[in-house]
Length: 287
Image (cartoon, helix red, strand yellow):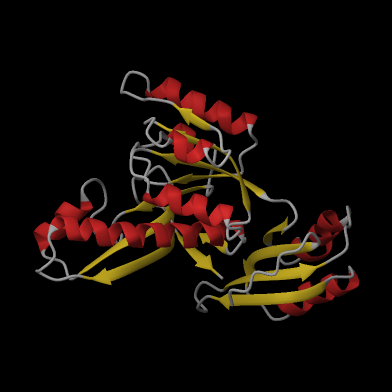
C-alpha cells in the first residue's frame, strides 16, 4: 500500500526476521507502550522453506532517545530481527552522478523542485560539463570531474571526498556511463541506485537498444537496481516495459526507452527515499 504519510514526527520501521507466530503482535504492543500510533503497515512472508518475515510500518510517535536501545533489547534480539528506523523529518541527502544524457537527471530535478521527492540534493557530479547550467539554475552545486583510464582512481577518490564532505546518504546514477570500482561501491552498500536501459537480465552491458533491435524484440524496458561489484547484476528495485514492433527503428526504441528509464528511476528513488525497500540476497522486497 503506497501511502506516504510524512510529517516531522513520523517514523518508518523496516524489519526482517525468521517467521513465527506473534511477530506483528509483539511489535505492535511495543509501539503502543512507546506512545506510537500505527499509520500504515505492510507485511510479507516467504514460503515455508525459507520462513522469513518482512514488515514496513509508518508510525506517529513522540521523540524518545531510548527507543532504539529498548526496541533492540525487547523486540529485535528475542526475534533475531534485522531492523532499521528512519524519521521522516530527517531528510536523506542524495547525490546524483550523470554523464551526457539529461533525461533522467532533469526528471529527478523537476520532481525534487515540485516537492514530489522529499530529499536534499547537495550536489550533482558529471564527467561532462554540458549539464552544469541545468543544475546551477536550481541552486544545486555542479562538479565537473572528467575521467580517463589514467585518472579513474583519482576521480573516484575526488567523488568519495565530496560524498564524505556533504554527508551523502545515497547516490543515484542518472545514466552515469562509467563503471564504479568495487572499492567505491563497498563504501555505499545498497545505497547506489543505477538505471539500466534494458529489462534485465536481458541485454546487460553496453548498447542494449542496438542488441534489442538486432534481436527483433517485442518489448523494451528499463531496470533500476542497487549497484554491486557485478555489472548490472544488483538487486532489482523497479522495472517497466513498452511494446514495440518491427516498425520501430533504433531511434524509436531509444526515444521510447528514455521515457521508461526516467519513470522507472524516479519510482526506484522514491521507494528508497520512503524506506520501502528491503534487500534479501540479490533481490528485493518493495512495499
